[in-house]
Image 1: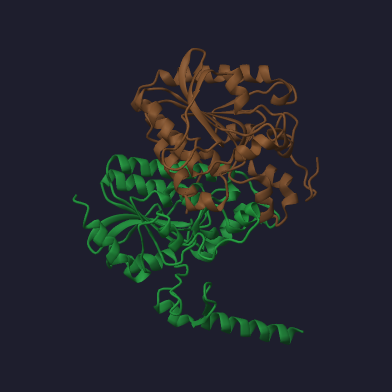
Image 2: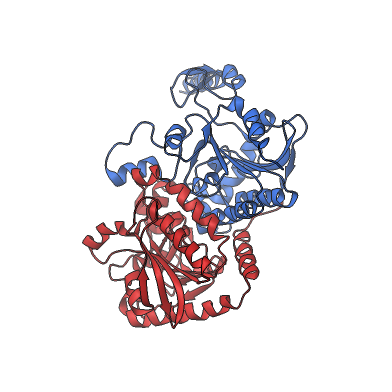
Length: 281
Length: 275
């Protein structure tokens, strides 16, 4: 595939370009949190509200069970259709969403319940009310507090990992990622409109940003890729759910064997080592 | 046309050398006046960018500042190339132009005799953006403060995460906040000072996490860019939107302090920590 810039884009993701992966990650039939709730988890007790301002429908959380294990489940909540998406703000959380997530994480910590976060958002909501209620502060707080939470945290990127909006619930001990999911500092369109001065260069930007699961595993940002069946998760919900379930159970077992100190040290070490630098000035 | 171009260039140079235009009130100020006034507009009190070494001179007691980790600089892990060229070329050019190895200078010293560790961001280097080496320097400063039990002060002046490092730059938010979390646990004071502009991933990480958050007058502070928000909601935003004054009103900063008063303000705050 050739891009607008005429550059040949690399097809290093099972024969697909990064831009093709971006499109699959946003596919209208792609399984969402609500599907995994049904296919992977049981006995979900939804818990609402941040106790300060409101309940943000863009973030869902509550107690759940996975293969008999009790967990706290928190995730971005995209909708299946326009009506659902308007209700849930397309999975774009406001400060009250991040504050609800933190409230539930602290609750889980008090009762020694492992935390599973499901990431699928275009980004944190860019709006007046989000800014005036402290979008930046709410994300910053979650990132800082997640470093201290004394129970295992597993984050699963199932679709779009949109920048700070994703990281706000994403500071896990283990980060799992579906093979056609993306995780990026900025959307390819946003990046293209700044660095290429034209958002139609998004395929070039997607390539340059290294936002696919395969690239991120190589960069040691994520820990494991969950392979999607066929042409993507949307072609087989059951098989995808089974893979997600197996991966969560396996990784949960590994983390549950660690002492609290070890758990915190490993999380500290993981994020302290993110990114390369030179020491030659 | 050569004579014309040359004289135009000369004129422009002279103008740029003699005058500074305030980004807020657009008035022209003599450069010498602007600089003696610490890059603050004498007309409207807008606080312009100040480079990290000038800030150090302004804040630290004479001959007390020692730089840490000056050798840490960026690498182009992703081999990122956009329309204008490679990231590698860009940061090399920025190094040359600014004389800095990264968008932050870190170190320790004394402010009115109080020992502090500091990280001072510098807008001249890639817009003060947060990359992996920037994050590394900030984390190391936080760790130094942690190990030596000394308060940390971070001065932010940044457009946000550095796109050319992809998700690795996003992860610097977690990396730096990890350092802040450790300070919190050990009850080591952390003061965050937000200068114009502090936006995106920097605001959404360490810049908002001070025990005390201080802003300079009229600094733009926000998460999403103004234009992005205008596009999302399809309407014009209020004039004071995302300014220091707006954040003070909404409860996200403790106070707005003039640059010339920062030194005494900070040492006064530090005097309340019974350590």
